[in-house]
Amino acid sequence: MRYFNALLFLFALAMSSACTTKNGSDQSSEMYNDLPPSFAALLKAHGGLEKWQTAQSMEFTLLNPQDSTREHHLIDLTTRKDLIEADSFKIGYDGKEVWVSPSKSAYKGKSARFYHNLFSYFFAVPYFLTDDGVSYVQDTVLLNGQQYASIKCTFSNGMGDADKDIYKLLVDPASKKLYGLLYTVTYYSGEAHENYNFLKYEDWQEAGGLQFPGKLVSYKYANDSLTQKRFEFVFENPKLTTEAVDGTMFAMPEQAEIDSLIKRR
Image 1 (cartoon, rainbow, N blue to C red):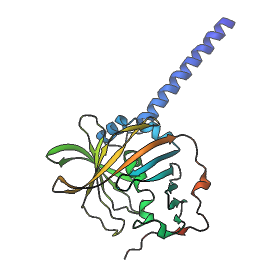
Image 2 (image 1 turned 90 degrees about the vertical axis):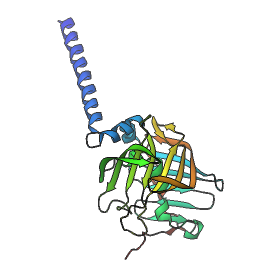
Image 3 (image 1 turned 30 degrees about the vertical axis):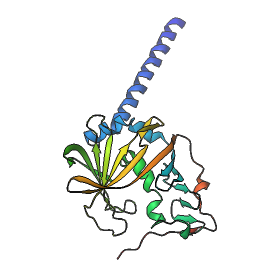
Image 4 (image 1 turned 60 degrees about the vertical axis):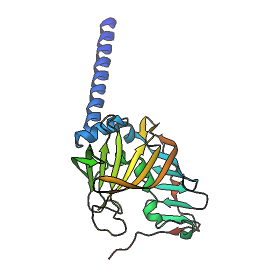
């Protein structure tokens, strides 16, 4: 009888393991159900959406080769709070306000509110574009005489500070990874348009089992062609972790100043 009971236990354990594996597989495949096939293939070529959804934080160092400055970027992927630390300033988002320390004048760019999550988003753009509120159209784009599979992404009303932006992901036909990104900037005007800029994704590197760019090169774009090179940025020491971030890191210091959302007519 003991032998029979042991066999029953082992059989039940095996069935339990089989069910767990199957359910996990079903849940994994469901992540891609609402995505265009080419977008799902791109995400899988980058390591899979499963790893992204278990990550708690992401960080990297951003190098500007034009002036050799470096910034450390950290983002809490569960709350989307973030922090940028440079030699002369800090920019943080505490979940409500974007702040600059020691003062707004310490940041020499046009808008800290616009900048605080800009490069985090570009760095991890295929993963962030799986957020709720993003709509997709599968298409093709002609660029410099070559046809690329493309996923056009638009945003629901009220999503972020620039819900009129349009992103077009261009898929490398050989690797199925992200070749480049056509994007519009509507933060300042609040008006939809189709005047695109282009980012070329280069020097892929691994973090947390996923692929991230080592370099972004920006070009002006017109008439289906890349024209003048605008700038490039390098990403160093990328990290993707499953450990929770200390939320106090994003709290606004006493001497910091708030950079509010731009007011539009």
